[in-house]
Length: 58
Image (cartoon, rainbow, N blue to C red; front, side, top):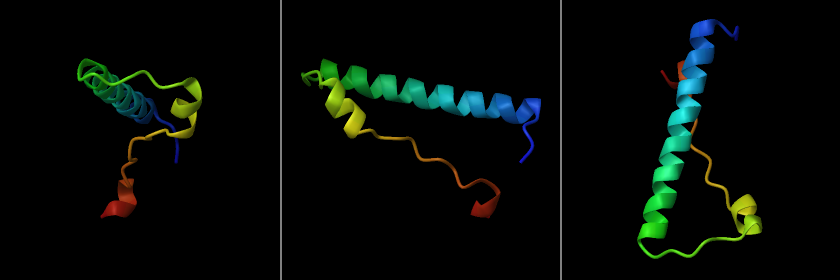
C-alpha cells in the first residue's frame, strides 16, 4: 500500500477518533465512580480499537 497524502490523513483521522472515543469512555468511567487503575493494569489490559478490514472486507 502506498501512503498517499489522502491515506495519511484518513489514518490520522481514524486514530484521532479512536483516542477521542477512549477519552470519552474514561471520563464516563470516572464520573460513574470508577477508581483509577495502576499504570501496570492499563498496560496489560489494553482495549485496542477494532481496525476495519479495508478492501478485504468486501
